[in-house]
Amino acid sequence: MLFPVPDRVRDVRDAVHAFMTQRVEPAEPVLNAGGEESRDALRDLRRQAKEEGLWALGHPKELGGGGMPFLDYVYVNEVQGRSEWGQLALGTFTLQDSLMLHKYASPRWRERYLAPMVAGEVSPSFAMTEPSVAGSDPTGIRTTAELDGDEWVIRGRKWFTTGAADAAYTTVMCRTEQDPPSPHRAFSMIIVPTDTPGYRIVRETPVLGLHGGHYEVAYEDVRVPADNLLGPRGHGFVIAQDRLGPGRIFHCMRWLGQAQRAFELMCARLGVRTAFGEPLSAKQLMQKHVFDSYTEIQAARLLTLQAAERIDAGDQARIEIGAIKVVGARMLHNVIDRAIQVHGAAGLTDDLPLSRMYRHAREGRIYDGPDEVHIQSTARRILKVATG
Image (cartoon, rainbow, N blue to C red; front, side):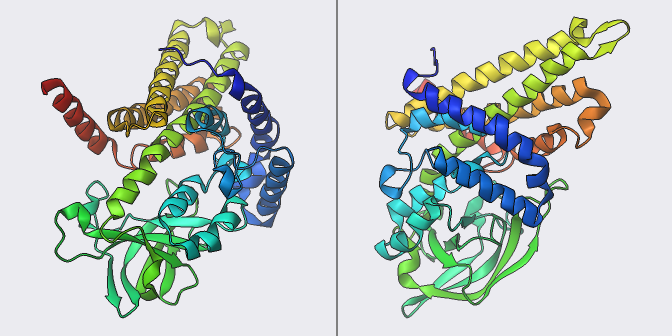
C-alpha cells in the first residue's frame, strides 16, 4: 500500500512543518526551562498559530476547530510531533478530551467546557492510573464513587494525572457498580472540577528526571452532582476505548515526527563529524544506523497510516492499533538511541534535544497500555481471525 501525502493536505502540512521548525523548535530551551518566561513564550506561539489558521486543526468545526478529517489530520500530526510542545502550541493537546466530552457529557458540561477548551482558555486532565494497582489490569481500580442522594461521593487516589495543577476539571475513572454483569462494566467516568473540595494534589511526580506535569491526586470524599457522569453508568471502559484507540494513533504519528527529527540530526552529524581521517558517514557501522533507522521509520509510518485508514473507514482497527502502539514505541526508542550514539558525548547533554526525547521515548512503552498487554491482546485477535 502506498500512502503519499494527499495534495489536499500538503499545504497545511508544510505550513505546520515550517511553524514547528522555525518557531517551536528554536523556542524549546525557553519552553523547557519553565517559569513565567516559558508561559509567555507558549502564549505567543499560540497567538501566532491562531493568527495563521493553524490552531486546533483536528477539532471538529462545530467546536471551533479546523475540522480536518481523521486520515488527513494524522499527516499533520506527524510533523506537529517533532517537538513535545507542538500539541500545546497548536491547540491539539485537548483533542481526545474534547471529542470525549462532546460525545458523552451532559449539555451543561459541554456548554461549560467545550468551546473554552478548544480555544485554549481552559485545559482538561484525565485520571485512570493508580499507584497501588497494576496499570496493565485496570479492572483492579480501587477509586470508588457512590451515589448519596443526587451527588457522587468519590474516594481514592490517582497518579499520572497529566496537567492536573492547571486543569479546569479531571475526568475520573471510578468503580460505581457493585454487582456488574462483567468486570469491565463496574466502572464509570465522572467529571470533577479541580476546585471541588476534597480534590487534593499530593505531588508532581518527575518521570526519568523530567518534570512533565504528571500529578498524584487524592480524592477525599469529593462530592459532585449526579449529572457529572460521563455517558451511562458502567460504561467507563467503553468510553476509554473510544478515547484511547484514535489517541494511540495520534501518539504514533507524533512519534514518527520525533523519530524523523532525530534521524535528520543523526544524518547531519554523520556528514560533518570526522574520525580517523574520514567523515563518520564513511563508516559502515554508521551506515547501518542510517539503514536501520530509515527502514524502521518507514515501516512504522505505513503501519500507522494503515491503522488510520481503517479508523477513517469506521473500523475499530484493534489489531492495527495494538500492533503500531508496540512497533511505534520501539521504533522511536531505537532511532533516538542511534542518534545519541552517533553524537557521542554531545548526545548525552542538553545541548541537543536528544536526551530529553530519549527519556520521553521510554515512556511510550508503558503509557496507554504496556507493550506486553498489546502484544498479547493483538496476537489473540490475529489467531482468532486465522483459526476462524
